[in-house]
Length: 206
Image 1: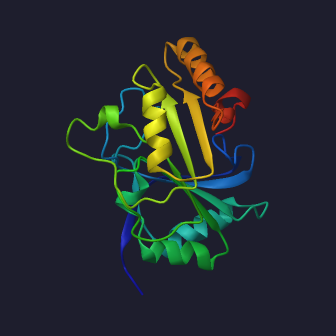
Image 2: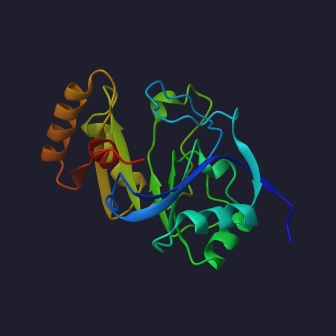
Image 3: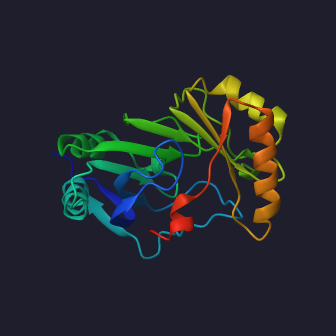
């Protein structure tokens, strides 16, 4: 039995997945603290301050307590969840009957499996410190559209990630309408890509 602890920012639910292929599905969330990137438009508090060090059994107990409708789907996010995800927590989550759906920025390979992996690459924030990992097998690729995203970049992601689902999602900052227009244009020109929105913000759920 491992005595490892994980720095957890929050565990919450029941709620709905707000993004990507599984948008609208009932779930609970496990949000790890700490990220290796500093995206200027990030809307998530992943700071270590205020996070709790929890072991795997405690995390699972809290997930089960929040999953009052038995969705048995946990969205694992951050921060950057691959910084902490390992076999101990993966095995504990699976043993409790959960499917683990993770969103990662794609800079690190998984140390333990998940049931669904969304890669959301943000190389404009790598600052020459990081590279996209070469051994990442994604189920979907979700690109947040800001002014750095164009057809050529999407084509490179299509070549890198041989997944079944591709989404362009407008960045929700002060220039949202501009980014939305560009995302619509990109999805229109590139039929493999679908327009994605942050459903949870539109319908106001956590």
